[in-house]
Length: 129
Image (cartoon, rainbow, N blue to C red):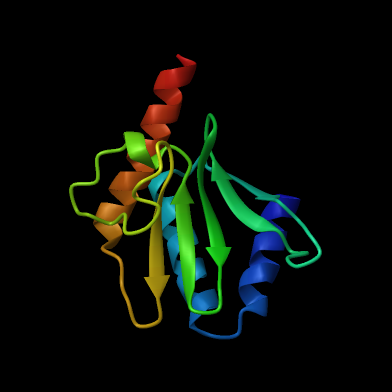
C-alpha cells in the first residue's frame, strides 16, 4: 500500500460519521472499476492538513472532497464523459470538470459509477496514446 493510500485510510477513519463510510464505499468502487488506479493526496493547506484524496490513471480521474453536509467526487475531465445515468449533479456549467455531490442518506448506482470511472480511464488513456 502506498503512503497516500494509508493517508486516505486515515482520512476516512477520521470521518466518524456517514461521510467516512460513503467515501470508503466510493473509493472501493473506484478501485473495482480500475484495479490499476493510483491514489494520491494533494492540496494540503492549514484548513485541510490531510489534503484531498485523488485517484489517477494516465492523468487525474477524480478527487474526493468532504464537506460538512456532503462528499464531492469531482471528475477532472467530466464534461467530456458520457453520463447516461445522470450521476453528475454539480459543477455542471464548467467547461472541463463535473462533480457528484452525495448527501447523507443518498445512494449512487454502483454499476453506473464504475462505468463513469472506466470511461474516465479510457479518456485519459486515449490522450496518452
